[in-house]
Each structure stands twice: as structure tokens, then as C-alpha cells.
Length: 250
Image 1 (tube, rainbow, N blue to C red):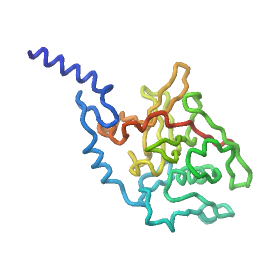
Image 2 (image 1 turned 60 degrees about the vertical axis):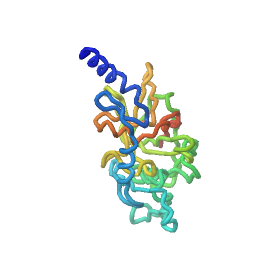
Image 3 (image 1 turned 135 degrees about the vertical axis):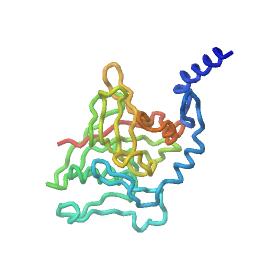
């Protein structure tokens, strides 16, 4: 009987990691519901405009889909903030597009044109260089069809209900392809509104093909995090939503 129980226990531990879906997490060979952990986590999400992290020194803020600050949402950077001889439109505070555009302004002195929804960024062909007023070409890479990804690229999500009705965009902060479990780190706004670290919003899983092609999955790489951190990903939110990434050319 003892041998049988040990065998069953070992079987649970082996199966757990593959059987626990996005609404459960695996701990010591057992699957546990995400319900209570998710409620505790959501209660910690800060109010509109609260600093939630800095990706490569570019700050990100909580959005909360706020409706009480509509008169404050248009955000412009003035010449004394950028060093450029003009006022620059950043976007609506503190949407995902706002963080992506502000990152490029702060790091590259450039920004992509206005868009209605985040997924439209993938089809843009140029960005404006505010240092000299010229246009910079953009290159797009389809998810799973390239091994060329680097920090500063914009990761683009397609429109998909219910999680991405307007698409989504995040900034690639770091790329780790040579480690045992490949991943990228990203900075973003208006996704979780609570970063996993002071320095990045999430680590995303990467699947590498035999040819080294990169396929990024909208699912946390939880290596190094507590098992229940998986609960921050909703079941189904990882399904075929990342179109690819966009790069500013110099």
C-alpha cells in the first residue's frame, strides 16, 4: 500500500506541470486554483498614474482604464523635457501606446505616428526623428519567422477578444536566447498594471525552432518566480496573439 501511494504521488508530480492550465498553478506535484491568488493580486493594483516600474530607466505608470482623468489624458512632452525644439505628442496616459512611444522618444529621439489601435503599429513604415526632422524606416518581423530580435523592438499583439480588443504593444527590454529556458523581458503599460519587477513588466516565454526561429508566447516565464505567479496569466490569453515586432532603423 505504501509503495502504491508513493507511485501515485510520483505520478502526480510528473503530470502536474503539463496538466495545470492557466487557471491553476503547480506546487509540489499538485494543481491549485488561481482564484484566490488572483483576487489578492488584483487588490494590489495601484491607482491611475502611480509609478509601477522603470524599463531601462523609462518609467511606466498604472492605467486602470481610468475614466476620471479624461481631461488629463492627452500627454505632450515640452522642449525643456526632451531637448528638442518642439512639443511632442506622446499619447493617452497611460495606455500601452503611450509607453512604447515615450520609450522610443527617450532612447532614440524618435516616435512612430499616431494610431487608433495598438495593432496598427505593425503596419507603419516610418518614424519621425525629432533630432533632425527626417523619417526613419521601420522593419517588421513576423512572430516565428525570424531569429532577429533585440532590445528596443516593439512587440505587437493582434486584436482578440476578450483580452486584446485594441491589440497591445510592449517594448523589448532584454533578449536571452542562449539560456536553458529562452525568454525576453518587456516593459508595458495597461496590461497588468503591476510589474513583476521594478525593472520589467514580465518575462515572456520563447519557443525556438530547430532553425533558431523565435516564437514569442504571451505567457510568463515563471522560472525564478513563485509558482502561483502563473496565475497572473489568464487561461486562453496566450493563444496566437503576438503578430511580431517592429524595429526602428538607423
